Length: 201
Image (cartoon, rainbow, N blue to C red; front, top):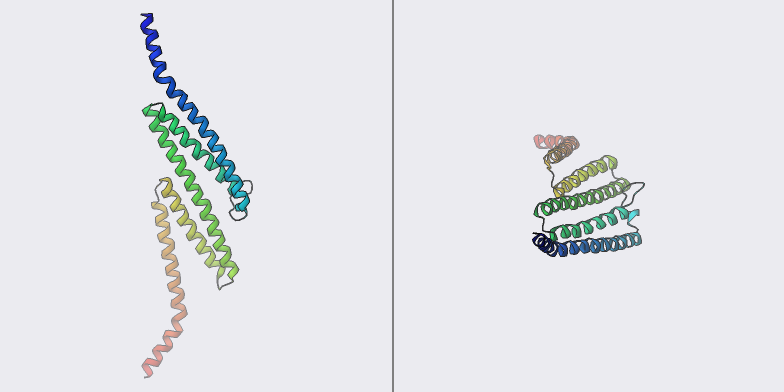
């Protein structure tokens, strides 16, 4: 009886122990690679002075957000591989879903940050151009760009975008109506003068 129990334990160790060791090594290796890539990302973006062009907040810069995101994406990929190696199907599937969602969420956040930066840049350039009604045009362009940015981010994350689609339609329709009214008012006198000439002839 004791010999059979010992034999079963030995078999269990023989089957499980190599997988556990490989999984631990994958986690350690993933942590090292993630740290290296995080450092390289920080150095590269700092040299490019990217924080001067893309603002995230007063206390945190784009460089820090990008480097931390790279770290977690790489580490989660290795951690996912380590869990898969243990051949625990339920845990592997759950963690794979969680990893996919986190990576998509990070991608969505990046889209929002970059979209906001680009929208702000375009808004400032429109204001600096000093064209007629520059403030209003810049606001319209900014809002329109932000809505599109959020819609793209939600699609990447995998969340429903029906509300933003409806808002986008309303914004486009409102802008179109405003332009039509402005053109109508602006061309009113011109059309009236043409009509008078036509009837005189």
